[in-house]
Length: 414
Image 1 (tube, rainbow, N blue to C red):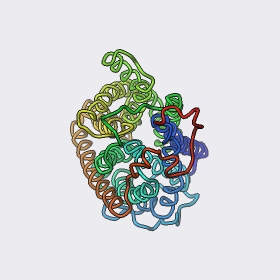
Image 2: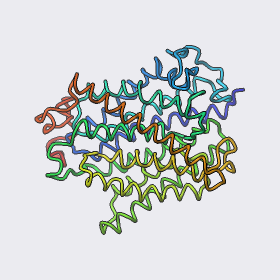
Image 3: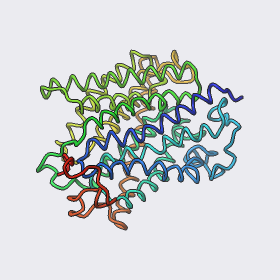
Image 4: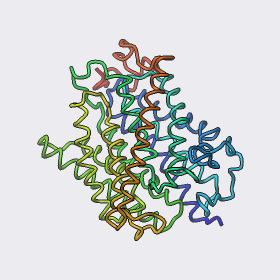
């Protein structure tokens, strides 16, 4: 039976999740050089259109449609056939089916947008769109069904992912790792430093992401109830603890705390709490955030030692954060806060940690291999990389014939 309060809550949360994609554009846009800011924005913004088309035509049915062998949904709901005002009890009995669909659409939109931070400043727009479309079809949709779809094999195995640690952050982190090796580093990487051109923009993006994350995690309860409240509180606990720990570690390690570090720590904490948000207590959420802040800081440092150019730290923040959060759900989840959830190792169920590890490992391997293959295919057929002269000119002019700033204000563009 449809409940007006639940419906209104999930609709608002869907709008909050949509807001995260422009927030991500600001977050990433401030960290690139001034000559690439509009191109970076465009990569996020245009995915709102591209992935929504894909979701309506095939994506929703592949992700949540009637099960085919635990692997994918069939195409019974293609073009949203049969997806109307009546609820679907397999997913949410108190909101219209169409509301569940549009809420999940916003997750599908932001996930490939997160990948763009790995290859920022050096990929052509048209091949990027082709890769994103293929990736949504062949990576995001199947993994979404495995973990969240009715009959999905990882779901039946007992893997839990409250709001996207596996489906969103692990998949995009694995794709980002594949991308940095296929695309290669930015021109002059390792020979010169690349500085963010507008950190206030990045901080504003962080604020919008944090704000939207309450819809991302809280709305995943799919009802205005106690589980939503748990997820809402856990989201803030994870984000603030991640920011605090990253700042403290950076201060100790580098001698000064930075605004970029605070922003990165907040996003690391938010990403890491995501898979566990509706399953853990507030103190556990703080622990998860603290672990995230320290571990993801070290993960970002590791890229220099490993020699790959993950421009905006997608692997170290989203990939590693998603992995840590998924595993910590296997430690700290408790039915005491969510009777429909699971107990983790620290609450008497050691098997859950192994189940979480298996789910994470399978998804990382699948997303890494498929992403690498898709990137190679698009590169062979279209050419992913900007030409050297276009990379020197910048995405804004080379790909979009625009400029964000006049020459007198184009700070950080060279």
